[in-house]
Length: 144
Image (tube, rainbow, N blue to C red; front, side, top):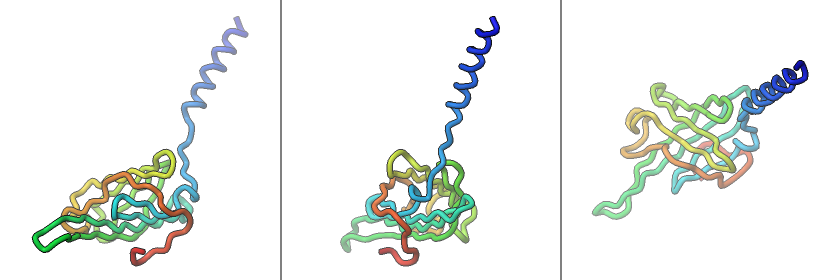
């Protein structure tokens, strides 16, 4: 009977351990440039659960004058816990942009406020799935 209890306990504890696998994202996974159409996100792991983030967002549309674009940009620090980073653009603390690291080299970005409250142009949103196009430490500042 005692052996039976030990086996059951071992199975239960093994299941608990397997269910608690960590979703830690490494600096090598974070660092780089991600693109979704013409919009771009640059990220660099800073350590201590912080990321440097730059958003260069574009909304293109056709008008009677030809192809036009509205833009939005934000640079600052995000906090990361497990595989989710949260970014509040400076000067817009009520705007929350969530970055979830997906399998492979993709990220899913969601913005919880409309573009006006994040300081972006008309119809400019960060939402979408971005694919990593460059690895390593990105340059911050003007879009490349």
